[in-house]
Image 1 (cartoon, helix red, strand yellow):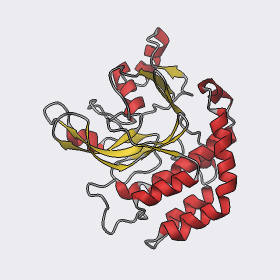
Image 2 (image 1 turned 135 degrees about the horizontal axis):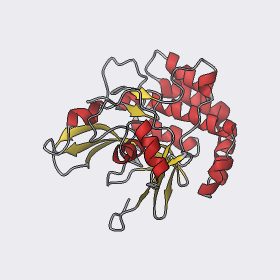
Image 3 (image 1 turned 90 degrees about the vertical axis):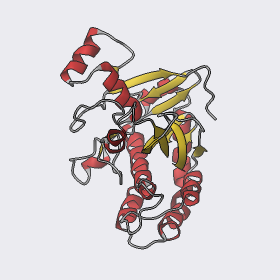
Image 4 (image 1 turned 45 degrees about the vertical axis):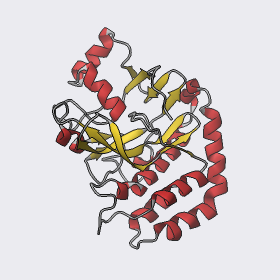
Amino acid sequence: MRDLFYNIKNYQDDKIFNDELVPWLDANERDFSNFIKKVSNLTIDVNNVAHISDETSWQLYALSRVLDCLTQCFQYKDRVAINSKEPFISREQYISFAQRLGLSIKTPEVFNPFFYEIIRAESGKPNFDILEIRYPALMLGHLLINRGGVVISMSPSEYNIDLVNNAEIYWAYTRSHRASNDLSHGWGSNSQWRTGFRFDFECSNGFIYNSQGSVDLNLTSDSTFQILQEDSLSLFEARELTMYRHFITSTRDDDDLFPYNYKFFDAKDENLELL
């Protein structure tokens, strides 16, 4: 997967699906499908994630980088940024690539930060109404591989839309429309690939965000609050950052934060059906 990442980064033409993705799939689809099946078996039980090898986590992280690069062309105000440096891929090609990897497509009609990243918020009501799905979420069973991207409405009297649209996003290698940060940043050309994947799970009764995190934000213990105090974050800010991966309401400086140890379980609304 690393070789595909570099091929995408160095690509200069406008036919990346046919020139790079299809040849890579033709050469690697069988081996990668076997890898995906292995991960699927390992993650049937959420508790097994603690036993996933570093090498498996690193390979999933490499996949996430590839998906970050492929979705950049969907992340501008308009559907596609003319003359952008990011390689163009259609939504249909993105879905085809994901399905050949063995991933499933999910496009809930109701916004949930588990499934969707906010590409852009626009003035309007109701809050968090989905105006456009730019690209779908990718799943492997109940394991989230990559969030989808949506345009949503937000009331400017209730939310700072400029903040929402420009907040720095964490657990993200690269974005076209906002600053991004992940644990690979700042490391050398080889060391950066030893970055662990973030494991998020959809369960029957809720969503587990960053399941391998060591700081449980559901436990309002003295030790949790001590860590949050050291991080200069409130419990609400830490939960918001863990779920959305960037601030939605907090106006504090979002540069140079370190939310990577947080995990959070968010119970499903019994009255909300995710399609």
